[in-house]
Amino acid sequence: MTENKSNGVKISFFELEGWEEPVIRENFPNDELFLTKKTVESAGPEAPADAEIVSVFVGSAINDAVLNKFPKLKLVTTRSTGFDHIDLKACAGRGILAA
Image: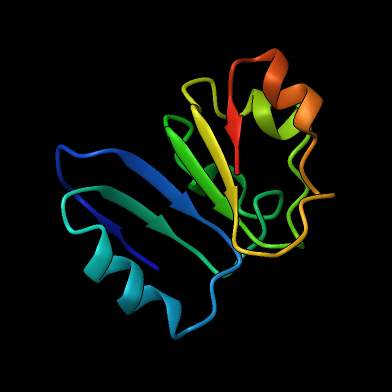
C-alpha cells in the first residue's frame, strides 16, 4: 500500500482489511500514513521507523523487539476488543501510551 506525504503525525497501520484504507485516508488527511496488510513483525524495513503512532490488530505482537524498531513511538493502538497482544508493561516503561 502507499504512503501519504504531509506535515502531520506519522501513523503506521498494520493488518488492514481492504475496506479500512479509504476510511483511514478520509479521517487522517493531514497525517503521513503507512498502510499495509502485513503484521508489524512481517512488514520488515518497509515500515517507517519514525512512526509516532502504530495501529495493529490481534496478529501483531507489540513487545520489546517491536518497540525497539520505533524509537519515536508515542502511542500504540489496537483495532480489536482485546489487548493481550500488547506488552503494556514494556510500553509504560518507555512512556508509550497504549489504547
